[in-house]
Length: 345
Image (cartoon, rainbow, N blue to C red):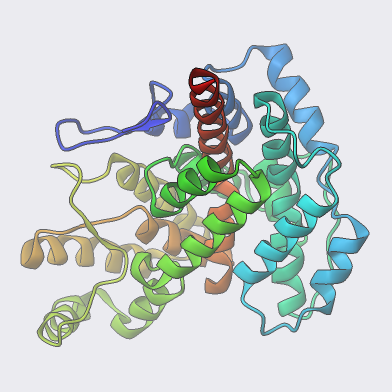
């Protein structure tokens, strides 16, 4: 448990700074939830307007970073592209060594602003498409999708995508967040700590399913009628079921149920009824045979697939969503180290 997020078998909820993550995904924007994660309270109107102006002003990729991305082969792992971009952002930050709470929040906002531009640019170049410049009049989620696909999709798609970002924004209990804390405690370098978290998430990919294993599984199953024989064979062979393994909540992670609802809205617009049928059959059968419930990555991977992202882009999008939580963890470790240092004087 942390002050950032709390979860446990004794409760059927996950909270972010005392607010239900599910309720936040229904009623709050990603920008508002990022503010909550960084500051500990939901913003007043003037506060969120100031943050939004600051974020939108920093969306463009610096020429040196854009050139570095362009020089990388299209076969480079997208997570390696992100790590390179984060390192270069640190190198160009004149206040990189400032670890005051305000400076760390400013770095977090900068990273949040530019990361969708990096992800979208890399996604498009791997598909032989030119970069789309950020749109300063669009929300965080709408701009993200516009840069990736060249236009803003239907409002329901934008809302579902934003819900996925919000559900991860306060992700303070994940393996990458755990990596952030000791790195930041030893040296509260925002950019170095975020790069370490990216590496940790990249290493976790095959387990959580965002590396593409969920989509591979979906393609192998093909139709809902094949779920049980496919699953029985996979379990008999000792295989791990991508996107499953959640045991924290008695009734499953409530964020999964919220994301299933968002997935349904996407599927209705993108002809994904077969995906929904496989999702429902697989979740029921896996629980029947193993007692395991899906992790959040399972419906998220399917949602991103229907939105149009390739599997290689799933984890980079998750990085963008997690940045508020990661940088809040870094700020917390920096403050704790500073307090411990003063007490030791």
